[in-house]
Amino acid sequence: MRVLLVEDEHKIARALKKALEQESYAVDVAYDGDDGYAMATTEPYDVAIIDRMLPGSYDGIAIVKAMRTEKIHTPVLLLTALGSVEERTSGLDSGADDYMVKPFALEELLARVRALLRRPTEQQATILTAGDLSLNTITYEVKRGDTVIQLTGKEFALLEYMLRNQNRPLPKELIIGHVWDYDADILPNTVEVYIKYLRNKVDSPFATPLIHTVRGFGYKLQAGE
Ligand code: CA
Image 1 (cartoon, rainbow, N blue to C red):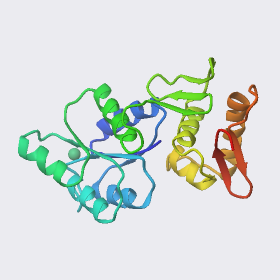
Image 2 (image 1 turned 90 degrees about the horizontal axis):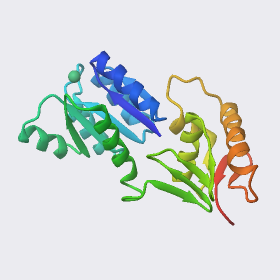
Image 3 (image 1 turned 45 degrees about the vertical axis):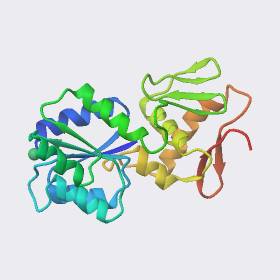
Image 4 (image 1 turned 120 degrees about the horizontal axis):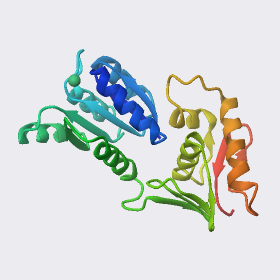
């Protein structure tokens, strides 16, 4: 899952990026409103965490409004130092999905991000499945049947993305866009390498393969025909 973080306070941005990366998210950071707006409206993010007060011609609210005007429905968590009822209301009125007042506990922020990520697809379940494969987005447990599979952070992120988008062919470029961050120098070839790692762990030891190659296009995760 790819996260956009727009935060001008470098110390906070660094701490958040680190915490999010430990949860296997790919994280891009923008340090002012203009970069934040440009990235939010051009790159495919799964969730955006946007500080309200930002230098530049866009503050947090203006970025969210612009995103919604441009029909970009990426879930947004707005961060702010202002905590009054009116501030909260105007934040949510702008089109943000959730609102957190600084200072906050990192654990709570991570929980809110997880909640935003599962909102559009499934309401409660944190376990994604395909056939006998299951992936728990909270405990990071991956299993086929009763067999536990150990994955690295990047392999987990790739499998989670494919599970959330199962039964449809995913071009390599789209996979790169959602699983790796902007700074990572990723070639389509890298996706092939990681798919191979995943297949070795998720498919090879088992009777039925779940990861399918779509020739000249990309990959598809599908159980059964
Ligand atoms: Ca700020």
